[in-house]
Image 1 (cartoon, helix red, strand yellow):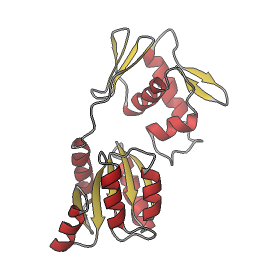
Image 2 (tube, rainbow, N blue to C red; image 1 turned 180 degrees about the horizontal axis):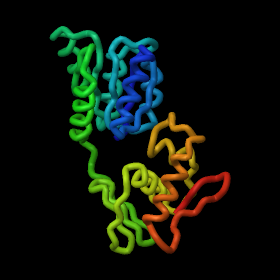
Image 3 (cartoon, rainbow, N blue to C red; image 1 turned 120 degrees about the horizontal axis):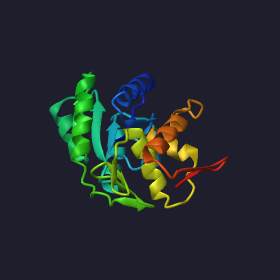
Image 4 (cartoon, helix red, strand yellow; image 1 turned 90 degrees about the vertical axis):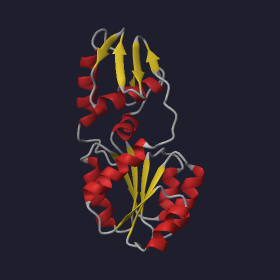
Length: 217
């Protein structure tokens, strides 16, 4: 699940992001409304957690623009403005849900997951190459008809490699797709994930490393 947190209180935004990542969500964070619009313009988010009182571009304007431009992204307004009239106003702008500060973190996680399940996106088509078949909707993988069990990160990395259809995918792009833009390139998590993925896919080897350029199937 891909989540964008838009909050100008940086400590709160970073704390929310850390907590969501512990729940296996890929989270990007921005601290003003213009950054939110810029990032949402080229990344497809399942849920946008949006503060209302933002610098640069007000949260109400961000909400209205995202609701019009990216209807598949669900919007959860997270704000101190909790009067009934304010909640109604936020929902009328296109927000899908509204959570008032201070909040219980477990409730935030539950609401985000509920919104993601309500996404109107059509089920994506299965991806196939050289006997490998990945079904994004059912989250299943087979090779020559043999079922392969992958964890979330392995699945996401394989999906990006299949999408490239034999083309090279940079390591940075694989990290962004399976983790988020803050993934540490020095941590070795991608290398460990690829090693495990190669082992599970079996012989003959399918994933090629082109030094300095990336990976491909």
